[in-house]
Structures are given as structure tokens and as C-alpha cells.
Length: 560
Image (cartoon, rainbow, N blue to C red):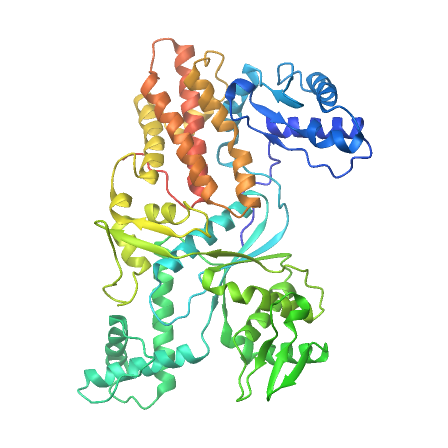
């Protein structure tokens, strides 16, 4: 379970100060307008200023006032309260209020970054909350595929975003180590082992056919001899071997888990039976055609669901409900599951089961991020066949081909609910068309400038934190400082919306600003004051690039 690395209070940034001031002023202007959400945005047209709000337009109808008149009142009050950081606010159009930061306030952001270092961008959106993020949760029946990789990249990045907003996060992997799929794995390994021994026999119709099954069979024969009568022993061996392989692949991907939860333990501990008994006692179940049903329609599902089949045995959503009861009982106020879109049908069922138990689980628990498929392309053609798995591309093969950083960046670079094409050739290319290379190269350029100046990043931040930044008046410098100031808000928005792809968009935009600055200006000029100011801004840009990459679980290389 992870804690915040630094308990220091996050700094109050200009946007936050503006928002707080406008909220206070709105309350003064209209005490009855409780609950009005004040939105502070970046204007699309930079000539309109650095920040803007439509609070007057939103509020005017509710209080029966002219929106432009109300905007003028907000602008006047805000100008007095924020005089140290903004020029006189301007009223535009039917009632927008535009704010332009004073040059000193803009430059102060760079100094703040140098002082805060790795803490810059942290916030308090979820301060102190206990959050559990479940992701990957692959059946131990084969190597991890690219879809699991997308889950791993998304789940880890979202966990990092929660931590950056003050939450205490537990990363959990739920092993589906019970059921028919595990049985099929054991039977498949035994069938391949018999083939290796020269024995005849049909391969099971529902068996696993990848080359990895033959490898497992050979390893079992090497370790346990030629007696294949103990199917339970084969099952235990195969599951343990595949779990170990999955763990190694996730380690290579830079993903760690705080806890692993076994589905089989829910049966062994009696939790499944206890869950069923509690649902029956709640009056939310009924018998029909020899099966036990749950009235999930009473909780928003489109039809009732079978819990216990007529021939015996529970349907798969029953242990899922039992598992989520454990999350709630373990004190997690928020639970998030990152799963493939093929799990869409389980959302309503699990939530309905938890509500039917009437144990205080809040509606909408757990949250879900459902991701769509990944198509792998190489040489302009879709890659369908794996060397080992047979029917899918494995995560390990993708890491070996494109590198961990590229795979992680690419797999979170689109919204989770959008299908994604992973172009191996692009991921391997060293060009500005490759987004992760483009971002990392910006950081490497910062490191190169510092080496030329005889500095490393740690000593540079300490030496330059008090530099006079007043020489930073150029257009590239102003644009870069403006972009740097957005980072804390981008992190907060990405955390709130469970959208790490927003961080990739931000990093690409920041990298573009820095590359433009690097190409337009010299850093190691003779004027010591200008030299230190430009170096300070470069170090600040490098720090924010590193912080953003860290959220995504990606390295910041000093050389490329």
C-alpha cells in the first residue's frame, strides 16, 4: 500500500487562487446561489488572457441580474483581491471575465517548480482516501497478452494519479484460479505431455493450443517424471508456472502489486456461501426452474440473473460479488476495476448484488474503467499470431520489440474506451513522429544543456532556484511558462476523470514548447543574468517532463 512521498502542503497556484477568489465573490454577490460550480478555463485565444470564467453568465439568471453588469462586479472585486498576481480583469462579450497574469506571477511558476521538484503537480483532491485499484487480473492459463498490457499501463498510471492527489492506494491482482478454464489448462498440459511421451490420444476440444502448453508439459515431465495420473498435481504445477511467468512479465513492464487475491480463497474461506446466504436472507432471490435467481432488475439491471444453476454450481458473478464485499470490508472507500470491455455485462450485476446485500455499500461501487481492444501493426500489416501463444500477441513480445517505455506510453495515449492501433515500427522509431521519443528527447536536451553548463539536475535546481527570471520576456519563454503552470491542473483533471491519456497529451504539448524554445534561443550566453534565467526555465521544464513521465511509469533518460 502506497503513501504520499511527501506530506508537505501543495502550493496554491494562480488558477486555484483565481477560482477561490471568484467563488467568494459570487457568494457575496448572490448568497442564495449555493452550489454554483465556478469554472476557470484557459481561453482558446491567448490574446484574451491567461484564464477566464463564465460565472456571471451562469449566475445571472438565478439571481435576476444582467450578466455583463454582474461580470463587471466580479472583475472589480477580483482585481482588488488578486492585485499581486493579475492585471486588471477585463469583461468580454456577454459576460466573460478574463484574467491576465502579471509577468512576475508567471515567472514565479518556474521558481516554484525548482523549489518543489518532484512534488510539483501534487494536489489534495483525494487526500487521505483509501483506494483499491484492481487491474490485469488475468486467468493463469497463459502468457499475458496485449490487452492485459493495456490494463497494466492504465491501472498503474491511474493508481499514480490517485497518489499524486493524496490518496493511499492499494494495487490488487485478482487471480481467477478456479473454474473450468483452469481445468482445461490442466487437461491440455497432460495431453501435450502424453504426445511428448509418444502416446496417442485426442487433444481436448476446448484445450489451450499455444506452444507454451508444450513447454509446460516438458517442464512437468522433467520435474515429476512420466506419471500423468495426478491431474491435480499437473494443475497446481501449470498454474504456479504461469503465475510466475506473468509476474516476471509485469516486473519487466515496471508494474508492481501490493496484494494478490485468489478466487479459490473465496470458496475455501466460505465467503461465497456466506454471500449467497446473505442474499437469500435479504429477500432478493427466488427459485425458478430449479435455479436460484437474484432480482437484479430491482437495482437497475435489464433482467434478473441466475446465481446457482439448476445442475448445481454458481455462475461467475457470485464470487465477484463476494470478492467486492471483501474490498468494502477492508475499508476501501473507493474501488476501481480496470477491465476489458467484454466485462461490460458484469458491471450492473456486481453492483446489484452489493446493493441487494444491504450492508451499506454505496450505489455505484465499484467504479469501472473498461478498455477496448488493441490491434498490433508491423510493416503496415496486422500482427495476429504469437510465437508462443499462437492466437494472440503477448505483452512480453511487445516489450522485447518496442521497449517498456514506448509500450506504456502508447497504451495509455488514447481514451480507454477507444480502440487503439499499436504501430510497432512507429514505437521503435527515433523521430519526432514517435511521441514517447519526442517527449523523452526534450528531457534529454535539458540534461545536455546542463552538462554543457557543468551542472546536474539536482545541483542546478538548488543553485538556480533564486535566479532573477525577469529577463524571460520572449514569446517562447512566455509560452513555455504558461504551459508549465498548467501541470497541476492537468494532473488533477486526469485523476478526477480517470484519464491518464490527458497526461500524454500534455507532455507532447510541453515537449513541443521546449523544443521550439531550444531551437530559437541560446542558453549558454555571456550575459550571466540571462544565462541563469534561461537555465532555470530549462530545469523547470525538465522537472515537469520528468514528473509527468513518472506518473505514466516511464523513465526520463539523460542521454538519447
